[in-house]
Amino acid sequence: RRCAAVIASCRAMASIAATCQHVEVLVVGGGPSGILLSLLLSGYKGFAKSAPHPDAEVARRLQNVNFAVPVTDWDLAKVARGLQGRANNEICVLLDQLHLPSAESVHGHPSMLDMRRVATDAVPHLVVTDTVGGMWDAMNGTWATLSPGSWMQLPGWSLDAFLSSTGGTAKTQTRLERSIVAEYYKAYVSHFDLDNSFLSRSRVDSVERRDQGGWTVEVQTPDGKRTIHAENVVLAGGSYSVPRRLSIPGEELSCVSHRSKLIGPPAGTTLVVGAGLSAADLIIALLRAGKRVIHIFRTPADQTKVVDKFGGFSQMYLEYFHLSELMKGKMASELYQAWPSSELAGVEEGGRCSVRQDGHLQYVQADEVRILVGSSPDLSFLPEGTVSPPLTHGRLTSGALNPHEVFVDVDPGTFEAAPGMFAVGPLRGANFVRFLVGDAFGVVRAIERRKNREV
Image (cartoon, rainbow, N blue to C red; front, side):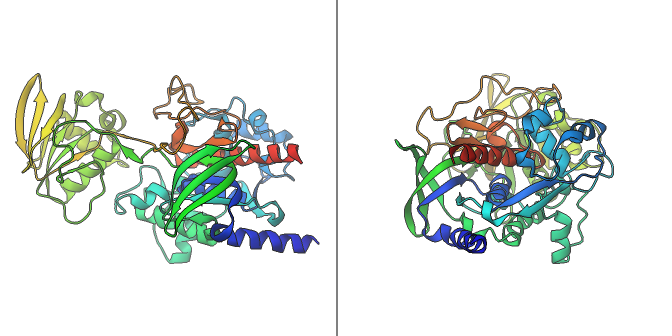
């Protein structure tokens, strides 16, 4: 009977993306959060290894846990209480220490999280996404990651194992080309046979609460519209879906873009608005290609994110340091012109741009304009008031202010934003991939516990 149940469960999971109209969990977004959620919902359980942990405080907390049961059976909030790190959630600090022990030390430490599949625990689910990998698939592939490559890996199959399978020679303790990470996420889905749970090239059009509980989700797929009933919905779409706009004349012209990705040869002169990481990446790529850049940013250089993060010399982030020196006027390049404390006021046909600085309008000529002043998540498919933003961005567990914007307020123990609706990753102000592991484990634990109470 048990074998028959396992076979039936596997067959159900294999065909669900094609036929089933009712699922236990529907995940909106196929980036790292959505991928890991799919792994856990497919019956994979995380077991902590009983070997001594290299961090003394974490080792002390693990003395009283039961290593024979999955991590999701622990009282995660109790075990994690008081742990400090660069995450804004204690459960995420704990799972990071299990997945990537002492990740910020010079040598790191092998993962202490062992993933094992319990097929009978698989939960019918769907991941609705444009592409597997989410925004990672939309990035400029040759640009380097900000963090070491190993920080991008998910439990159960390391980046080193992926590179070994492809004959790759990149060192995962260094920054990697983003295309390597994007390919890893695609390969991760195939490695664990998760493909049938993904509805790719699809989007969620609406989510409505059902009177009898759960949610009705309208999904646009390549084959047309589908209506799916889900007991739980997890918002995992990230925060980069909707570029912010300046609402200036000419912003709709064809020479204006709100994306940083380079498509084809770059133009002769590009005017870039913004001083965040997306703007910095684009400017660095343009300068490397020998193209002229006019850089508009609204504050003094010392108050920008680029200079704040990379203003001190670092061999690891040399290209960002050089850009910060250009922005401050401490270095010069015939290809780069900084306009601090200024704002773009308008764009005309032919690329004539008006720039306001010190209360005066001046004019510059550009072949293209890139407006990179941040972005927001697309939650337009939710009824107004379904989820709410927090009053503040809050603090990291270390006590420092959270540098990331928070769009959805969640319960710190369950990641629930509304009954039966969860929000993970950048939506709740967690932008590091390594800390998303805690989000996924926390959500699945909450769903499992609720389901067990209902049985």
